[in-house]
Amino acid sequence: MESAAALRPAGRGLPERARIELAQGITPEFSKFLYRSVGSRWNWTDRLSLTRGQWADRVGRPGSETWVLTVEGAPGGYIELAGSPDGVVEIVYFGLFPEQLGRGLGGVLLSEGTARAWDLHARWEGFSAVHRVWVHTCSLDGPAALANYRARGFEVFAVDEADQAVADASTGLWPEA
Image (tube, rainbow, N blue to C red; front, side, top):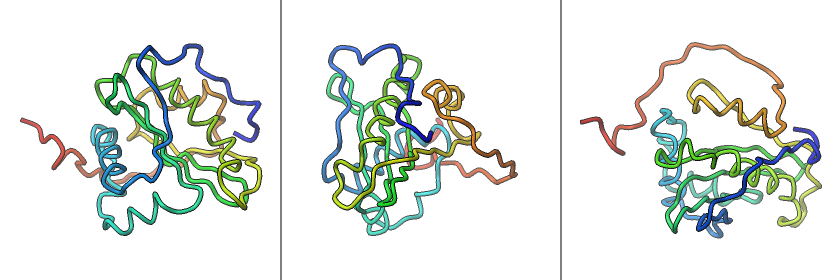
């Protein structure tokens, strides 16, 4: 997405008793909890080998923000942004907890997170105005992910195909019975 004007917000708002808030001073533990709670279903494993210090470096670097969806006081999803001083913001991770899927919350969370990506420079001293927001998606993301990105105004920039072994990210979270 190369213009804030391209963002097409979801048609619905948040339900009563739901909020999206910036997790100020996020800890590696809370970030890992969000990552595992959303990503274990989709076999996200790219961060699981990081040490606590490496994880802290990622979520604590300038321009990094994690916005958390809460529903009735409990976490229900998140969107992690990685801004750079040159005005480019990546949506690093985005998703919902399993019990929030299918409730229309993904479009609302992505809309709000993308809007916060576009104004990220206003919260970080020395950052240029944002001119590009981007996201990677793959077959390990939820089946509605690509349609949601397109519905919000993102355009496909490139497509790569590769065979890759998929690790089981559920081990240690909720192993299958």
